[in-house]
Image (cartoon, rainbow, N blue to C red; front, side, top):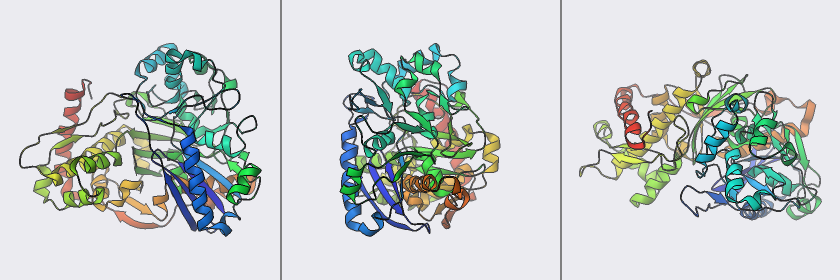
Length: 496
């Protein structure tokens, strides 16, 4: 039995995985974020811990016997968040999250200070990444910056606390998550002293870099007793949420990948070598498994855009909105307004934290279903931007993609996306569990060590539903996509 813990932005999820790949139990607890100023996005790590404790209490009540048989823990989590610890291991301030946009000026400063940044880190300096956040703290909170003894990412702070915290907790970070800091030499899978120095930091303030399938700590006796787990079980290096999702659905080799419709929207393609493409704002990261990398396009508002539309229009649920869009005739869908989905800025392909959303072409004839269709299409068009920015050779290898995330529950949306990227999309058994399943598999690999059968542990789950492109939709969608592409530079002041 293996326990996967996924620390998301809106929820922490727990999953128990049996040796025969059965998902024995799942629990979760909600999280909220704070936006104390425009562009800011923060959470306090204490809230993560309270949510984990609550979810573990649920799991202990739901499956105590299975919990007592757990042999390892795997971790996954939201990437890029800056958790700052002092010399005593205490958190210094709320964590600055992946969707925080305050440090645009610091990104420019970092690129100027490190001319080789793109080749070292494989990515543009973007406000969501960790390194510019520390430059912002150094500039705006200098007294606090001087007290920073360790920088961790969200899931790695959980490991630190799970293994004892304070002076004894394990400080480690896997290469996939570390890739999103800008401090990692992604090709070499080790910290870059050059980029760290440009941020006023040293390797002494960084956790050790491990692979996602490595043992990177052990559960403390006190927590084992509290939650009904065996004492001293190993904690795997784990992975950033998207790399963990890839392990969970079996996207670990070239030609394999997925589309994620979560809070953010992601297209992920696994690869066997490092292929950076910073000009297109594509992420080139290490994968969670040794000797592998991946490319990823990211848009900042995906299923969250549909959630926003539900709240703005007073719909009872996102499902109700999607049903109203699906009920439109093909002609009515083509008359819907165009939606730019940049509710919180955008990454691929624009790297513009100040990009703004808009409905274009509204008339009295439009109702809520038209707005819903516009949102579904706008997110789809943003994902198509990202798909086209990925390496052409890697795209050619991918004959189909898995579909994960909360938005994957909509068949109408899935067919729309399949039509846009011209690839079948498949839902796999357990795919709704997302990164928590991949985290559990990484725990399994870590516990097995050199004897681990990676191919068996990380096998692709069976397909439970497939969504084919709809040829009749293609021409109309691409005509609307051309309008979508033309609108961005006019409304957001940057050439597309």
